Length: 447
Ligand code: PLP
Image (tube, rainbow, N blue to C red; front, side, top):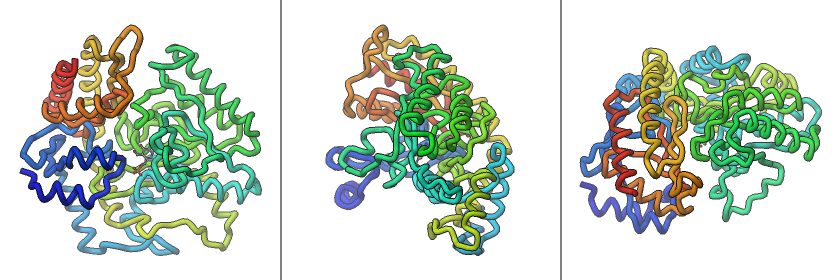
């Protein structure tokens, strides 16, 4: 059992990310104690399938001894080496090389961060530097997509298009702009995939024309929008946006923090449409949540322009824990696991997950089931014909989350009535069936 004193200590001292502080104090903390495979157990011994892989990150699943051993070995041998200046460590060099070999096209240069938000921040700094090197410092306007999420750092949060991450902070982001989302279930242009692609391309062109092409630096996409509610663009959307950026002479950035490392099937989701971004961000599945790490991939063009432009001068961008050797050792082992069965298992499990969730489509509360691979969502409605959303409040979502937990399933219940799924790639058939069964039971109890 979770001792009262731990709940009280949490209430008094631990400030939780993305939480209502007062709401949390009232509800009290839920503590997970252990995990094995796709299952986690809470402090009272209650076992659940982790349908959300922690926070879309434990792609390899819990209890992978070889990851623990890789981290232990590295900690014993050399727990820290800076990547600053011209120093380095073997695992960081090897991981960069392995990633570059697998990355799309000429994304041959890897810059390690601590997670996704600072990876996005790093792209902004690299891009600004790049245009300075090209003698075009006026190219300083950035565009992203409504419903997108690109982290919550002070600079990168502006590219995040979810109101929660802006309200109350008062930070000026007048150099960051949005175009409407491709959200097909609720799109003013309708559900026709070609019409949605056409509208997005048109919106990007219009935004660039409004700002002036000579002022626009870059356009950011998630291959599938995650935190916005698992919004899957029509097939061909990512490629169309990439091509439009090329025509408009602006950089195209794929934020694969969620979609990377097998989440949608392949190692990187943009390869599904043969898209090669100018820069790409990853984190989460890179180290499967065992230790923190993110990575920015830079194309030859971007890297060489910066390197040549700076000449002998150092480029002043770095973190103490960039290229951390323990994180890199974990990353190398995760990559080995992905390529020795986990990606394949994820593809199989993803097909079972999507089939199971689609079988819930006739439930009176289910408006839409969508997803790809091991990334899925169910959008709940109170009236299917009119697509009436659940009341926009965190209360119904909280109740659904609580019921699912009691039924043996951890899911993400978004405040707008969308249920998110991102289970570990190691799920067995039984894990997937339990995710679907618990969801059905939870929905029945919610009617
Ligand atoms: N970019 C995307 C697409 C994300 O989904 C996230 C986090 O969920 C981030 C960036 C930020 O990553 P982190 O939470 O590791 O800072």
